[in-house]
Image (cartoon, rainbow, N blue to C red; front, side):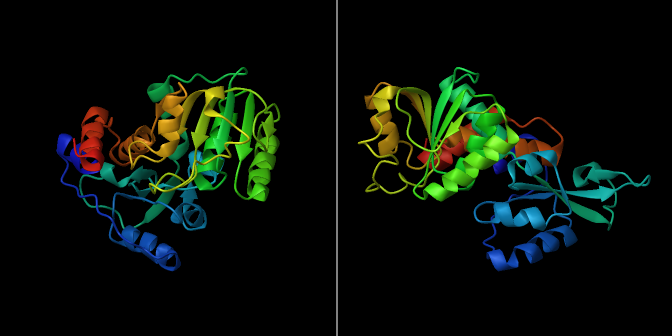
Length: 278
């Protein structure tokens, strides 16, 4: 999607993938800075580690406690920090790495645009998984003002930690570490269950049924339809996979690097072609 966006905007850029061991992440970030890269994306397990490795954290990274996007910035003649894209002549040697999080906004945008979910005091959401993605989703949903959050994780202690964090940050939030006793507006799968064809469903069928949910969202985008989404559609839920979240977080990163609106439609077509072959 980034190559398609780069071509659409006529930029002489390349977006490349690098396999970096966590032990070498700091060196990789510093190396990219030294080579005057425009920016970086980070994925698991680097998002948490990078919090301590960038020079400055944007409010988004501080709020959600993870960095998935880095923008390199330099100082201009007046000593102001500016994105490297803005330097048309020589790029300064004094460069810093600024960490952002574009995942959280991407989650709610995908839920709104792909499923038509609205957030408010009457909204009830079950989040399956309290790891990195589940934690950010739960925190963002609390920030959006959902009325009730239910957190379920294989290790209950991790869900309890996320619940405690939500209660500390959002005093009015109602969060329960357990399955709901009645219906919910939305179920979000933030676990890795569904990546393999023989994976079980990401919830205990004896404790929750999808016919008690109006909508279901799976952060997994390959395969396009997991067993969870198939079951959700069979139960009459509106359902969507994680392609929208992937698209919107990427588009936001692209805009941070370029300072220009991302060509969303071009990026979506490129994603769908790459992931699904059409």
